[in-house]
Image 1: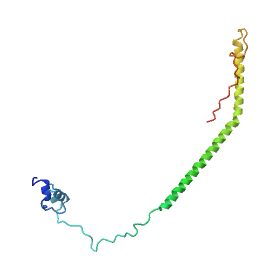
Image 2 (image 1 turned 180 degrees about the vertical axis):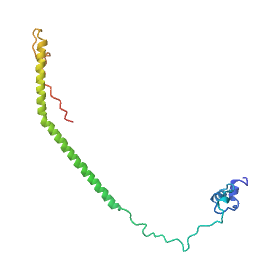
Image 3 (image 1 turned 120 degrees about the horizontal axis):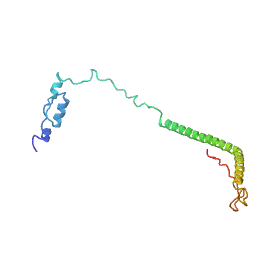
Image 4 (image 1 turned 45 degrees about the vertical axis):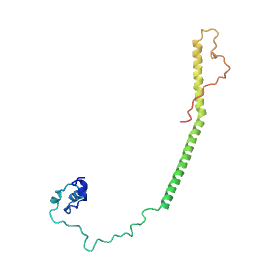
Amino acid sequence: PCPRGRLARLTQPSRRIPRGDPIASAEATMGGPPSNLGQFRNKGPIVQDMPPNGGYPQITIKNMNKARGPGGIAMFAGFALMTAYGFYMVGYTNKLRRRIKEEKRNMRIAIAPMLQFEQDVKFLKDRESDLKKEAEVMKDVPGWKVGEPIYKTNAKWMPPIARIKWDQ
């Protein structure tokens, strides 16, 4: 190894480092080149910070470990109370929603016969007008009976039922 290498500089006795120059002292201890920056920073004698006469005041530590905020049991109890209240409100809201839904369903059930009657009246009026049109159109066809089904099946005929949407 070269005697002028980095290891040689670190193991050699330390050079004189100007006091108060952090850059020069860091470079000197790290084995860097000497720096001239410190000469221009400190123009007067080096003054070290010292404690005031009589020393620093005593640090009071007796109140530093005072309990801050509620304890663990109180926080757990508060959490449990809030959770219980939340579950109570969920149950109450579910019951209220169920009652409202049941009321809507009962209103629809109560009004369904009236709606069905209106639909039946409309169906009868439309059926009557359809039979009149059929009689007029088929008057020249021999053996045609108005209102008689074309297809001969054993299925029982039922009038169309009004579609009521119960889920709305």
